[in-house]
Length: 250
View 1 (cartoon, one colour):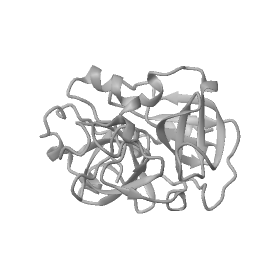
View 2 (cartoon, rainbow, N blue to C red; view 1 turned 135 degrees about the vertical axis):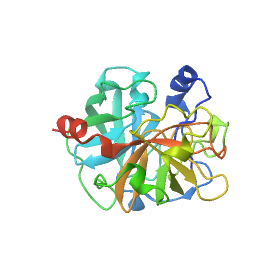
View 3 (cartoon, one colour; view 1 turned 120 degrees about the vertical axis):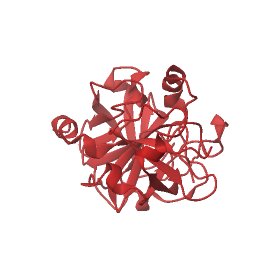
């Protein structure tokens, strides 16, 4: 399965700089967009940079770090919906606005709203996902799924997948996750998840993609200590941002 979050080194500044290009799913298996109709590819100047998640017909979420190091001009961005492939098919839609959380700083508040120029036509391949009413520590031990087109072989950036990948992870208690070297700074706005199979994880290129529990969105791929290293990956807990999301999808 593809490793769905961005994996950073242990130095925050290095991790921040690497995020846009280093998030993919490792140890997963191919899947179809019909199983993840909310999954989008987020494009910068027509090139794939991150995943994104459709939450209404004309709005999506991604990780703030996916847009921080790129152009502030929304005309440079677009999304692809309804395709199992990262580079063709489905519908490409231009972006009207990209709104990173105003408190985003390297790792915390790693969420951004994408407003599309018009509503996407819904179908079996294109459907918004609802945001879970349950998040954080309440999900400890629960099985979740992550999907994306990121790196499939750790440390080989060229191994990004052309076909959508998915894998199953288990939510890790924050107290346990913080025992991982370099994770002492984790906040209540983050969720940790770890692969349930050997070498399964999210990785470079999966950033901004969905972490899903019982068909509801609970997280976005954010960062980690490398891909498939045995350390949990860290995801933005979207259940902590109802006001930010509501205000910016109007």
